[in-house]
Amino acid sequence: MRLRAVGSVLAAAAIAGAVATGCGSDHNLRGLSVPAGSVNCDGKSDLTAEGSTAQQNAIALFNMDWSQLCPGKQLAYNPTGSGAGREQFIANHVDFAGSDSPLTHEQVGPAAARCGGNPAWQLPLVFGSIAVVFHLDGVKQLVVNAGVLAEIFSGGITNWGDPALAKLNPGRSLPNIGITPIYRSDSSGTTDNFQSYLGAAAPDSWTRGASSEFQGGVGEGAQKSAGIIQAVDSVPGGIGYVEKSFADQSGLPYAQINDGSGAVALTDDSARKAIDGATFAGVGNDLKLDLNSIYRTRAAGAYPLLLATYEIVCSRGYDPATSAAVKSLFTVAVDNAQGGLSRAGYIPLPDTFKKRLLTAIDAIR
Figure 1 (cartoon, rainbow, N blue to C red):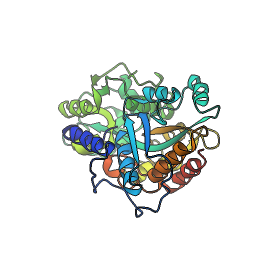
Figure 2 (cartoon, helix red, strand yellow):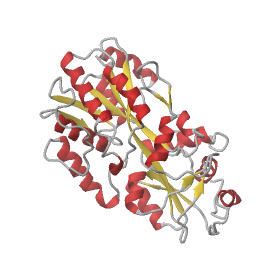
Figure 3 (cartoon, rainbow, N blue to C red):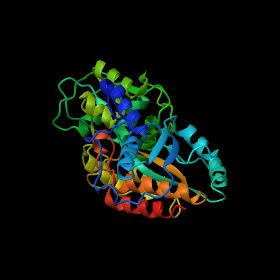
């Protein structure tokens, strides 16, 4: 997930880079809700982290607010990808990792060893949403569901005039033209989440599994989120999946989803409703999510096509200065820095979810 779309990616990177080095700020992006000095600023001045590019710009915003509320505090975050972040955390080269995926079964033991024999916790601090963008001349509103998307992206539905689409869009005239699915040709956490959603919400229609590589076998591939936007925009009949921030900046329309509780548009509120109903696969303060509880939601007004990214931390085993600084940064992120997330293409956390995170953060030692 990125902060801006095709024309603004370099500008976003410059903003994030300036924040990461402590050189200036953007008052329109800051999410501060309390005056400086009213949060706990204990612990060491410098933290290090590595991992997910999906949360990179959210981390930049958190870092900006932390530095404002706790002058002299600084996080150095290296966006090398989720896998590299987990490996660097386990190797004790960084204080925490950012990851689109939880620790693998094989990594749980080594992560605990890195934490002095204590379990690592997985805290989902950053959520994004995935938009289903489309290009149909004269059509600005479209309703799909997981089953139809599964058929489209595996080649079962090939024409916009298909009866399954007509049933979801009564009274709307869809053109009798071919469908061109556009998928990420590079390894992508967005692809992994999209396919996981299809498998969870439409298991009979999507049997190809989930992976950071596209498994559908049809359509045209495009590099990165910017490539998805460019390809869909250039192909009448095209449809693709992309982070909401890219869709918003591109001007392409994106579909509503009706998985059984009515058509739901993608908004901050509809995404938060899905997050609010999430359940946890982790134990205690390890807040590893059961993402199927989001993907399969039937809650009225909940948009199910989301992605979550974690901060992977030691539950215990830090030195006191590090644990205090980690707790300070994460508390600012959850309690004080949510206001800027929506403008950056992320989903502000619902209050009930924030309370669960704050309880876990407070228990870090």
